[in-house]
Length: 372
Image (cartoon, rainbow, N blue to C red; front, side, top):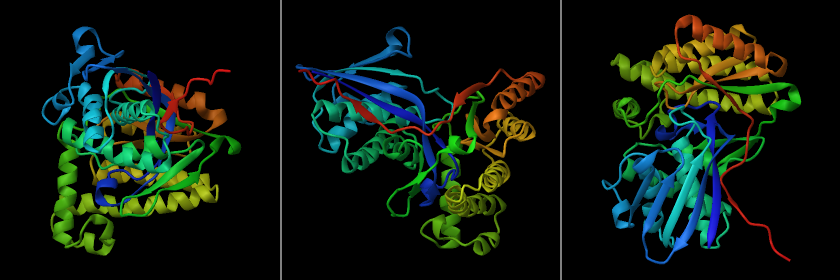
C-alpha cells in the first residue's frame, strides 16, 4: 500500500518570536510543498530517502528505536523524528519506505523543516486510512513539534507546525499561544490588486546555531524579572522599567509585536492595506533594533522594496538570514523585484530568489482516484 502526502512552506505575515512567549502570530501557507510517499513494508524497518540529498547522505535506515532523541543527525532527524514522535503519541507506525521531495527552499526561513515533518506525519496517518480532520491536524501539530524539539534539538515554539497543518487557502491563520483556538482570517489580496512578494536572501538560516535559543532564553529571563508567567502577560510600562537594556529591548519587541498582530488582523478585516504596510515596517524596525535578528541583506530587501513602491515590507521567520516579504501593488511587482536584484548586485551580495506569496492550503493526503 502506498500513500502520498504534501505539506506547504509558510510565511509569517507578522508576529515573530511571539509563539514561545504565549503570544500571537499570523502565518499563511505558500505554494511550495514537501511531498512524502510512504510505502508499507513487512519487516518493521524504516528507510527514508531524500531527493534533495546526494549519495549515502540522501538515505537513512533504521528502526523506531533508532529514530529517537540523540540517534539521528541532519535532515533525516526531522523525518525519522516525526515517525518516532508519532509512535510515542500512539499512532500505528509500520515498517516504511519513505521517499521525500520538496520545492520549499531550505534555510530560507519558510519552514522547510515543518513542511517535512507534516508531510511525513500526514503520509503515515493516510497510510492507516485515517482522515486529516481538525482533531487529527491539531494532534499532529504536537507530534511534529515534539519531533523538532526532542529529536532535532531545535527549540521550536509551534508556529511553523501550526501554520503548515492548520492554514486555509486565501487565508491567514491567527494563532494564540495562550490557549485560544486558531482563527481563520480571510486574506485574498488579488481582489484588491495586491501581491505578497517573498524574497529569499539566500543567507543561511538555522534554528540550531544558538541565536534563536539565546533570544528565547532572554525572553524567559525578562519574564522572570517582570514576575509574569510569560511576556504575553507583561505590560509595556512594566517592560520599560527593566534595568537590563538587552532584556528590556527583547521584551519590548514581544509586547509591541503582539499588539501589531491584533492591529494587523483588524486592518486586514477592513482591507486597510496601507495600515498593514505601516505595521509591516514597524515590525521590521522592532526586529532589527530591539530583537536584533535582522541582517544587512534583509534590511536591504525591506528598504529597496518600499522605495520601489511596496506598501510595506519586513523580514519573516526566525531571523539571522532567511526571507523578507513585501506588500506590493500587482503592477509594481516586477519593478520591485528588479530593484532588489540591482540593489543586491551593487552591494556585492549573491542574487536573491523571488517566490510567490499567494496564500495556499495546508498539509493534505493525496488520495488516488476511485476506480469504477
